[in-house]
Amino acid sequence: MKLQKRERQARLSSLLEENPLLTDGDLAEHFGVSVQTIRLDRMEKGIPELRERLKDVAVRSLDDVKSLPIDEVIGDIIDIELDKRAVSVFDVTKDHVFQRNGIARGHHLFAQANSLAVAVIDDELALTAKSSLNFIKPVRAGERVVAKAAVRPDKRPRRSIVEVISTVGDEPVFTGTFEMYRTHESGKEGQS
Amino acid sequence: MKLQKRERQARLSSLLEENPLLTDGDLAEHFGVSVQTIRLDRMEKGIPELRERLKDVAVRSLDDVKSLPIDEVIGDIIDIELDKRAVSVFDVTKDHVFQRNGIARGHHLFAQANSLAVAVIDDELALTAKSSLNFIKPVRAGERVVAKAAVRPDKRPRRSIVEVISTVGDEPVFTGTFEMYRTHESGKEGQS
DNA sequence: ACCGGATTTAGCACTTGGTACTAATATGAG
DNA sequence: CTCATATTAGTACCAAGTGCTAAATCCGGT
Image 1 (cartoon, chains in turn orange, green, blue, brown):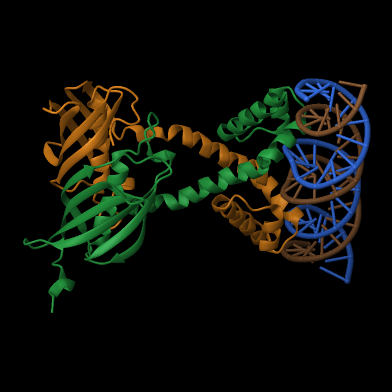
Image 2: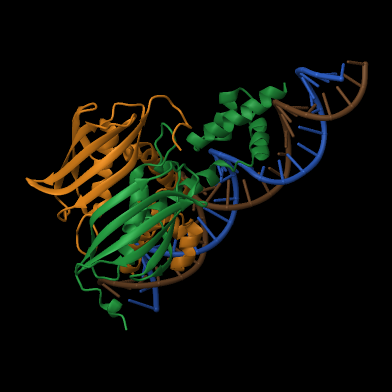
């Protein structure tokens, strides 16, 4: 019955991989063997006990949480001159496209452009008030989108217009006009 | 020494919030009190034991992994009538806001509205061609945004206009007009 | 049919990080 | 001083293990 054992251990590995919260008891029941057998299997495969597995998962996720605030800026800003212009690049991966057709979802292009518009404004706090977008050409996974922002002052106080043009290669794929609102102080009220 | 206790419990809560892997022993040492005191504090604050905390973190992160590919739709669609109208809700959490001021980043509101616009179009493939947005009022963590989309036909073939209004409570916080491009003629709308 | 190695199961002592409960001992404010 | 609150101590117990020893079972080969 050499196969039984190997087979069981293989299944055990993959089972725990997708569901690390199973106790030895659960596993024993699942395979119809004794708890001790499961323990031996884990030993041989070098699989740690439930608590260790949980801790691993938890630690990894906590680390992730700390590195997640990528959210602050979408795309890498590679050049910036506050209140004037800025450039960012954003590599489109399969995570950003529709599964069905491989075309990048609009909100990612928007996010890159909007992030850039926020970043280029030289103020403690810049908010988007209005914007108008043009999705010119579909972008696909693997392509690199370069967004260029140019700031234009507005007649109204505390307002600026940011024009963003995103290109892949030389072709424009997206343009956006962002009307930005800025505040000087941490005024929570101010703008309603 | 009423303050000592309250103060300690408050610190304990926030300490565990940012680092859930501390044992009662660690905490006792950190505060210079006995393990039992820590236990009492946890009881009073209703903070579960280490293993429970770990499991929570782990489960949440595992769930996240499974629910992350929501990427396809931002927000939960709770009502939809293809090519006519649709409603989705999106709960804003601290993950969606600027750390600095707690205001939701524009691209999340856009993503919800744009997702909804794509979903409401009854076609194999719908793409956003243009859009015009209005960020009316800042949204904060903890608020629930309800987006309502209404489809309007366009004179041009293969085009539809989707109007989205997002509200928190009764107040509008965002509006968007999306000009959608579809690969097939809007067959259903033959009109009788 | 019998032997022997591999496999499986069992049992016991011990470990962590707790819960639940009781009892003793500060500590400090009125 | 006294009494309530806060803190500490100690016990029994639990889950989910490790580590170890020993017994039982299986299974193939000669």
